[in-house]
Length: 106
Picture 1 (cartoon, rainbow, N blue to C red):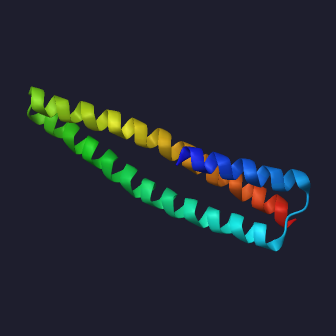
Picture 2: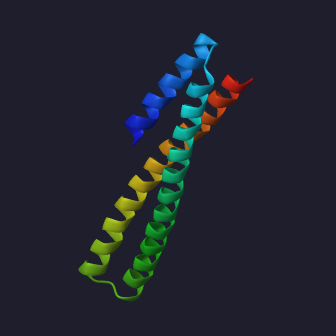
């Protein structure tokens, strides 16, 4: 996903640099932004649920300290960190696309 959004950002930047984009290209960029918005929403929901599961597993570990509950906390914490990093990249990419489409529309 990160590779896809970066390629769309580069393509949109080329359109802005040319200072000339057809309506079809602007429509295509708007469609890509819609796809990435949907992806961002799905990852936000997933990130929230993984974060909640991580917090619940931490409470379970504090109440029942054993290797299994520790392993669950460790696994969910690592997963949560990677989800946060992925969501951060996705969010920043979409924000960049918003700015580029505004530059094209102006």
